[in-house]
Amino acid sequence: QRPLPCRTLRYVPAELEDKVVPDAEVLRTLLAVFRALFANALPRQRDVLAALPEPVRSKYQDLLSAQPRGAPVLGFTPQDVLYQTLGFSVARAASSLAAAGGVFVAAGRAPRGAVVGMYPGTVYQKYEPIFFQSIGNPFIFRCLDGVLIDGNDKGISKVVYRSCNGRDRLGPLRMSDSTWLTSEMQNPLAVGQYVNNCSNDRPANVCYQELDVPTGFPVELKQYLPNTTYSCAQQGPLRCVVLVALRDVGQGEELFSNYYTVVS
Ligand SMILES: C[S@@+](CC[C@H](N)C(=O)[O-])C[C@H]1O[C@@H](n2cnc3c(N)ncnc32)[C@H](O)[C@@H]1O
Image (cartoon, rainbow, N blue to C red; front, side, top):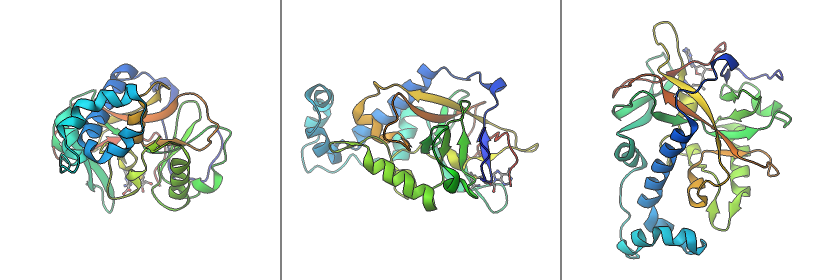
């Protein structure tokens, strides 16, 4: 692995690579949440829809005709939509650790095996330059194959993500979500980078799972994927990382993962 000057490098050791939940199930959950978010935002997405090819547009025709132009948006927050779809929501709040932010189950109960978060950020292949972005950066996640995800919402990391997100568009459609960099998040799961490291008195209740998003992922839902590739030439599936509950996690409980590294 290449040596980097980042402060915290999270990763999953190869011997723990067994997944708690099969990829197909993770994908089903993401599709359910993203479809619900898209339907909720549909009145605001008319122009996007109008530009889509017919087979995609007709999937949403019923919903569109039920919402006349100019009608108020359905009005649910992304967190409401998450709660309605999965039976729980997650949110950032002050951590139980001193002077730090963290992530909590804000409403409902996340059952064991539930996808409770996504790890947003720019995806770097092993051979792509990340040295300057990684200096003092506590938000870098290392995948098993050496792919790195930079989930820092500040500085050069933020600039790079925004630039890649603006680059990859299909007509009016974004191919990834950049709203996790703002206070108006459209994907309420995109808070995985703020989950704190476990300790003896705060054992891990979530774990990371890598997921390669198939190239056939619905084009209109890619705008909710909180990851973008550093290189525009990158072929093949998009690497994402999700956080999965290791046990039932109740309302008000903070999420802790295992960084498998020294936290400084
Ligand atoms: C990616 S951030 C996690 C979110 C961070 N707490 C925040 O407020 O944005 C990682 C940093 O959080 C802090 N951190 C995470 N887990 C910790 C722990 N168990 N004890 C102390 N600090 C921790 C460390 O400063 C670490 O470099």
